[in-house]
Image (cartoon, rainbow, N blue to C red; front, side):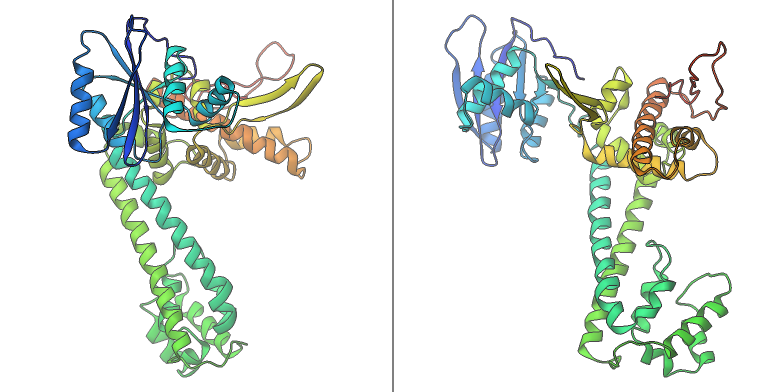
Length: 431
């Protein structure tokens, strides 16, 4: 994935600068010094004409390169892949740097970008294009992206409730909130949005009215009794439960509940879609990885077997190390972060869950890393980064080798010297 992909000298090179309504195309045929320029509109007729012209160049191999531009490149790329052409992606960052180097300026336009894309195809600075629809991960991607959108919207609504509505109308009830996946708290507020709605009832009447709202709870009577007593001690603004402001509060509460229900429905759909998927099941064997983390990994990385080495997968995630060095100066070695941000964040979150569990190799590695000073924030940050990289290696290993996750007991390597540790999870060595 990270090495230049050699370009056959006999291949026809096609560079496409993708845009919303039209695409600038530059075609170079071996032996022909004159390049051909085309403008292909994003219509079915124009796509058919363009593909027919490329097919007429047979039997020469045709290599098509383009820069991913939003999602506008997807329909044309799908048609090109189905037609049997070799489609390759051009990195946006690499394209910008190459354009500046070739033209010694920041000037940018579509024909110039097509020339730069063609140059990058010639030197092999492109990556194979893996079409989501052709590789059967389009449905997984849509589930993953929609789950993230809804989760972000849910978090925004809940923050609005906690920072605006509750401080005004019922500040003391926040301590009963629990985790963000609970619907009962918002259902209770929807029915009793202000202390006056609770204090108007006796304790027994309130417990009876709220009994079915809070669902299954340990010591439910004590919980509801505590809420009733809290309402009597509240410092909330004296607003009537029927006031227009409280109606707006109920609207926001209803939105929070709707988003929670939508998120839960997407998680169930993901489990139904991938329940029999061997990679989905295998990923969930790793400590810290649940259904949504496994869904995101498959959606963003596709088939991990296409990465020949775990270093390629780590670079795809942006978890590879980079150092700025010039002459006698050598900067700090840090993560490049030149990769898939969603995948990197997912592995980070999975690592944080794993190191909080009681016993696993990730927790053991983290403890060894911070043993010198457990309260040093910089050391803990570096340890978390190392655990994230290990999570990526283990994930790649168990999928590529087709092995189940195997817990192990770590110990020093015989022979003394610097203590080294060997990870039996997917036969992947720790950092």
